[in-house]
Length: 332
Image 1 (tube, rainbow, N blue to C red):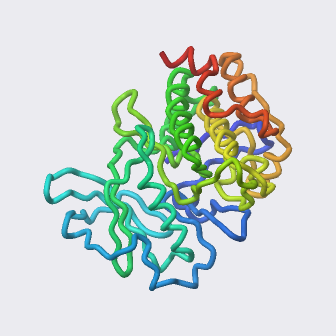
Image 2: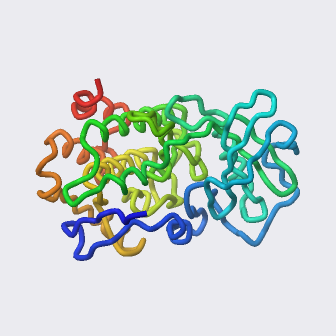
């Protein structure tokens, strides 16, 4: 995989986006209570203490009675792997994420992920089809999406003068906003929106995009106090999340960062490690480098500014962002 171009206008040094293996090893959180290592991961507190008597799904069931699970791995993470599976009764093809329970410190967090996926019913969110549990594993069966990660699309399209054109970027961001609006209306905060967690349904031009990986998601309602566990992936964490006092607006900051990267090909707040990225994010020095942004519309810059407001109370909501002229004019 070619490195993603990071512009020197953001920092004094070029940085590259980590490979998938490196992301699994280094992507982390600042919380001692919750952590995330990569796509296909679940929050973890104590990876040496396992709860073998805890049932994530409520009962044991045998996936092999209903599905033929292919041997080829199509995705990996710290806690398991993803394979294609075929429903024996119909021949339909799906994906199955198999999670090794012995590697999960807090199985109740995995239980929360499964329960959230059961609730989801939106065209821009990954659909869970089935879930099975045996003594050693939890198997989450979902629709299979073959178009690849948005991360890979960014890597392929990035040049020294930018990345995706505004029409394609706006179409993708509109889908993400619609998914997040649905989540927020139902009391769910995703907390890990990033290009690795956005999959294209197929390789066809204009393919729909799906929000995946609810391992860090949680329910949070307006009457509750702010969330305090600083979880997520460094590049996409909001200032208030880093500081440990935040609400659902943190998801909109993440979407702002994704939008910036889609248009520019590099992140708005950069660093050679997580600590430097946190520092840059907290400083909030948002730069629109002329070589890239000079060819983009004023509406695009305004859209990004409204999502990357350091004051979360002034940040656009998902509903407001969907009504922004940049989205309306680029998404008929």
